[in-house]
Structure formats: C-alpha cells, structure tokens
Image (cartoon, rainbow, N blue to C red; front, top):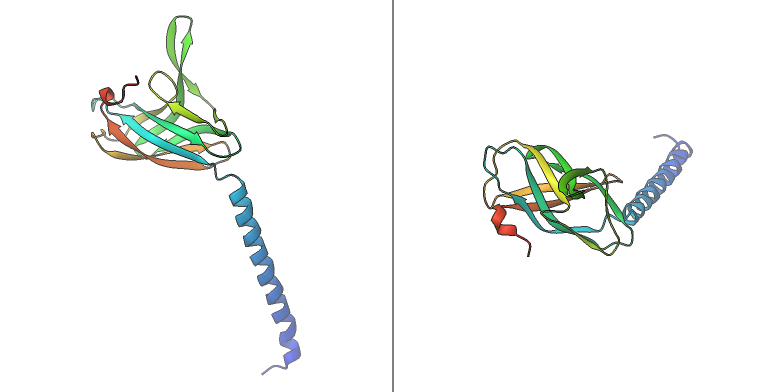
Length: 163
C-alpha cells in the first residue's frame, strides 16, 4: 500500500473534522434547549361542536407558561381546517365584537385562559364536520417559529359553560 506518510494528513484532517462536528452538534443542542423550548403547556382543550352546516368553530383551553420568558403566540394550525386565527372579544361602546389578534403574550409564570367571551382560537373552513368526543390535533405558533401541539376534545356548546 501507499507509504504511511501520505495517509497521515488525511487521518489528522478527519480527526479534527470529527471533533469540530461533535462540538457543533453539542453547541447546537445547548442553544436549542436554551431558546426556551417554549415552556407552554396547554390543558383542558375543547373545540365547540356546531351543526354540520356551520363551516367555522372555536377552540378553548388554558395555556401555562412555566418558563422564565414571556412567549408571544402569533397564530395557530389545524389540519382539519383551512385557517386558524387567534381572536378576542372586545367591548366597543356597548357592542361586543370579535377581533383578530396578531399577537397574544403569555407572560412568564402565568396561565392564560382562552374561553367563550374572551380569547379563543377561531377555526375557519372545516374540511369535514366534527363529531362529538372526537380528538383533534391543534397547534399554536409562537413568534420565534415554534409549534405548541396539543389535542382538543370536541364537545357540545352546553358542555363547557364557565361559571
């Protein structure tokens, strides 16, 4: 075979490349875990069951931010529908109206409730009618591009009245 001296530069090069890529991977993993994999936890998620002729519905849930930084939600996703938006009910004079929210801040250490008459997730253009007790995967999108995935249960409107 070839004399040892011609292999030497390649083994050294290979070794340093291996160490460099290992260091890169480690650094990347540390960075990813520090970006506060948005420490958001969604609970009690429900989607309102409406008559099959109604193409839009809404989802309600509690979202807790157990992290040390505020997290900004900018939208949502649902495979069951054409479009998802975050909305809030706002009093305008003596009229309650629904308004799209381009950003909803979930403060560090707080829990925000998305509920009828307040913040909620609007689901537009259902691709097929929902069924009672169906479990629907949804996702919230954060400003920094993360998806917070969760499952919501389909319930009749009278099943989730707030007291």
